[in-house]
Length: 249
Ligand code: IPE
Ligand code: IPE
Ligand code: MG
Image (cartoon, rainbow, N blue to C red; front, side, top):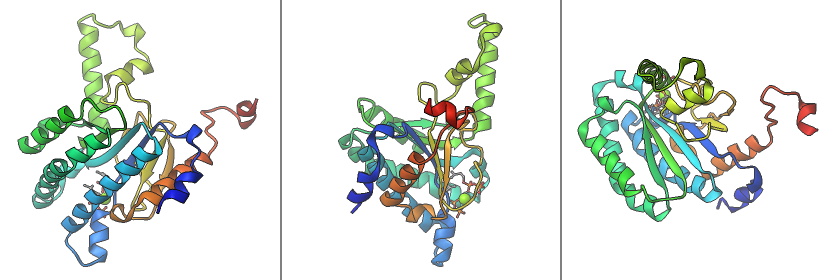
């Protein structure tokens, strides 16, 4: 069904890292006179589909914003439901992740996560640690300001301990202290649900990401639309501060 769109993708110019702000579950449910939780349940199915297509297309890194630091302020029942859903989804999907050679990774402040969810996730990371294909990173209890603050704290501690010299701190140093250390920066940032904002996601890392916003709510986002975002990405000219003429030289 997605064969035609996949064929339109230039395999030589793939984004290495695609990051997605998965938004619009609540509105998707509301439109159908359903509870917000029904939107989250459907959203999990989209995660499976998009992981599959990203893997099939040949993306190296897929990072999904699943739960923000600010989302802890939602009604407790919704927070509990989301944490429960994570456990159920990981239990159900681990076998398929292994089958598709996908390695699970997590970034975020796990000290705030319920023990059951955290344990299930770390077990899945262990179970997929040998996988060499797509790296699927879930940003959970994550915010970019939390991450950058943590990095500052650790850089300062290492400077005080003389592990690093203050004069040598550069942007590459900062990158090494972030939770995304070792990953390339996202080339493409997709946001579903129509809001044109970044909501505290990967602020440092998206410095030069191409941004693609779709009105489609996350539960309705599909493999075709993912391919369309990649095709649109490939039509952009990434200048990194230079002029167009410099790039063609
Ligand atoms: C995204 O959908 C999922 C999470 C933030 C956990 P929302 O729940 O934010 O859905 P909307 O934006 O209210 O429609
Ligand atoms: C962003 O969605 C966070 C996630 C997708 C996990 P939100 O729904 O929390 O974002 P805002 O509040 O509309 O900016
Ligand atoms: Mg939202």
